[in-house]
Amino acid sequence: MLTLYVGLFLVFNVRSQSDYIHVQSKQKAAFNIGIRGHYGFIIPHRVGMENLIQGHVKAGEISMEKQTSGNKSWQKSWKYPIVGFCFYGADLANRKELGYSLAVFPYLKFSPINQNRFRLSIRVGGGFGYVTKRFDTESNYKNVLIGSHANIIANLVGEAQWKLSDRIWISAGLGFMHYSNGAFRVPNLGINVPSMNAEFNYRIGQNPQRTIPSDTIPSVKYSATAFGSFGLKENYPVGSEKFPVYNLSLQFNRHFGYRSKIILLGDVFQNTSLEQRMSQDSVSYNGPTDITQIGFMLAYGMVVDKLTITVGQGIYARTKYKGDTHFYHRVGVTYDLTKRIGLRWMLKTHFFKADCFEFGIGYRFL
Image (cartoon, rainbow, N blue to C red; front, side):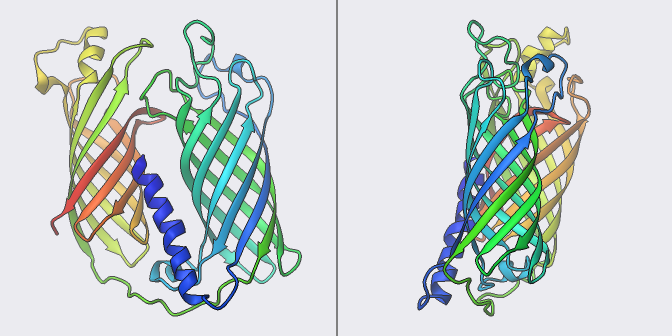
């Protein structure tokens, strides 16, 4: 997950600030401050969760953001998105067993409809989360949602924005917040909070003037990368040891302009947690080849400068253990450190059940 945070920070914050300073060196730096309130609920997506949900979730956030100028081609290609950073806090409506949640994360805001006094925007972010009450076998055994204080969060907000003055915007929309530790510590059913929200946003300084990109859109159409990844996960019962999960991937990309690509992956997994699960489910285990899984995945990659956000659907061509179905899924990011070397973080799941986080490094050979 470190790749996600470092990548988002570098792409959405550091680069935009350097671009802005280059263009606006003679002007006062401009940024927006937003205050947003949320009113939502925890989705009871598993049997046994209903007793934990005792009311509506009330949350608030403070954000700082800035408008990109178009100095880089990725900014112009995405129609001058807004980059920002958010501080989030929520009362989970069950202070004894769930407590409060906190989060900090960078984000990118796209505006497919952007008129003089009205914008329709989509905000995408991810970062660190903290839940004050976690599962404990003695003091908090009813909390089957989350087994760790520290978690990963994903955030999505869709909003309609109206301009009241040259500096003030207000908005109303729908949001979604997700907390998970990727089965690093069970239980890990996850906390999913959809919400209604409203924001007051105030700009300080003047927005940058749009400029001609200083770089060029790459002409590459095909590329290929070999990745090696590693992760840790727990099995039930609670308190089990952490098992390593290894992965080798060959990734082939078909690029479409500067904004997207179609990805085909061939995967080999060595999932050491399966030996224990096979024993629990009375499946014979005859050696390491029984926990080797081979799969293929088709994915979509959303390209934002050096960062690619990936969502994919995979199928196992070979797996002896059938308890997780034949399908697997991934969501995550890769970040290009150089033209040849990339970092990868992925959350691998079986439908809505987290399998593990994958941290990897890759070499581009085509």
